Image (tube, rainbow, N blue to C red; front, top):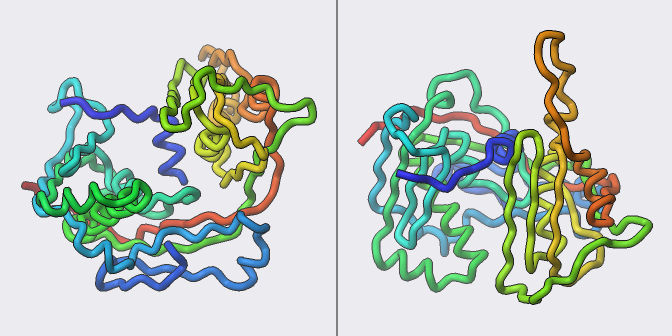
Amino acid sequence: MKFRAIPFLVFASAIALVDATMLSATRNNVRTAAPSSAQRSAASPGQFEIPPDWSDPELAKFVYSVVSIKPFKTNDNSGSSLGDQQSPDGFIAAFPVHGLIYEAYKTDHYKIEGGTGGGVFSELFLVEAKMDPEIMEALKKLAPEKRRIARQHMLQVLLRDYFKVVVRTEIREVPAYDLVVAKKGPKLTPAAEASPAAPDFKWSTEGTTQLIRAKNESVASLLAVISADTDRPTYDKTGLTGVYDFALKFTPNKFLMDSPPSEDSAPLQQNAPSLEKALEEQLGLRLQSTTGSMEFIIIDHAERPNMN
């Protein structure tokens, strides 16, 4: 059994990372702190984000009808890797509880807190879920963004019913970055065959180096990369509206900030600059400090599910 591989640095950064309406704790096991007027005024225009309204009654019908949960042990699943596979009628995933919560509640800018101390949080689970045919057809008819939210809602219900997950969310003002054009101008090549409908974005790892290769992609495609590396919300303020072919090669902050190796260990070979330097040297873009909003997903409770 093979799963979509998730690069460790990407997954770890995301884990280390709703509409601000009160959600029903009895329905979704979610409590939401609404942003104050002070928070709204503190953030610059366009940098205070309102996450999805998970309480939308239109989402209620989107649930999985059949769910199987088993322990996942790598030595019992040779050839498997951490990740997931989605299909039109469901999904199969090998994840810790943190990973499932991350998939269920993630928004553009978020962090997950809590859920430490071993127990259920130290285990991996193989989860397979299927939906009824009529739900699958209803899902197909939704717009892409609405479909993504419906899929997340389905996973939230699964977590509530099988793992007894309780989370609460808060929106806080945090340090952020604006991505802007550097003084010498952008170094981006317009896409050879401009087609916004056919983007191609590849993110890979070679040793301590992260490689980004993109075709027919907008500058906004870099925001998730920057946020994962800097642990800050990032906003596109370049004013660049086209699609481009570009490559980016950098050393993640994790390796740049690690303490020096001991005398008897070989130093890590870093063959690429920091992300901030790489953006300016390779793409003609730079990061400018600002403030923005981030959703904090706080895990209060989870239980080991009944295996089936």
